[in-house]
Image (cartoon, rainbow, N blue to C red; front, top):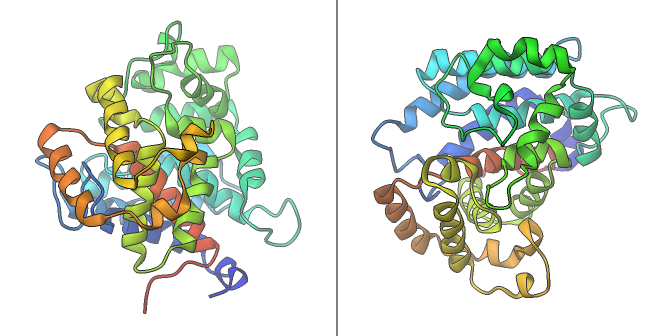
Length: 323
């Protein structure tokens, strides 16, 4: 399928498919996948969450609806159908990507790219931020304490944060920028927030890993997951197990990919991960890492969010499920 044909497809269908492909990819060390449940979370809950989120994704595809309302509706639908938080982080990334897909700011159905999604995040409002906080009242989300001096912006405050947001005139992008660049060298930055603040560089890089890879999309997703985890420490692992455990988990993923030539050349993050290394990732060895992570309670959930977003972009750019 050509990229032009991909753009003609319904973006909401592609977003829903990305949610399903992400959880079906295996192995994704420490995460639920089609072969592995966690003690408190099952594969089928993610299927329900993907279905439940659709109404919110449809709002994201409606330029007349706000990004914040689309996110809140998607999270509410997910929680109602799954009975728990399965994909809040995925939806935080998918909603602006879907909105950027349908925006016609550069002429008829322009290509989805970093500039388009950056415009969407920059155009968010204080009302979007308020809706974002309300969404956290729908589910129990494992988050780290807010950065120093930002206790009044703790997402766990939910609607109680609204007066602060309005008084300070903080948009949704403003709020996420606080977590994206914490004033603490030991703190692991929120990777999803960094996507919002930086134009989704991890998403688009990983999308190219997936698009140019071969084999089933679920295998490509699993390999991209390893690349993303190797690139940077996972936010959820840092929040639940501490920054050192998060950094160690990334080092273990990097070891599966082999070599550190890019890092030696001064590259960091996703730029330090070689595409050939991702495509050649040993998924048998990754199974062993997956079992170890589950035993240790290491759950790189934010890496799964990024993998889902990358799948969406890859689908929009021509990737398709195998016949």
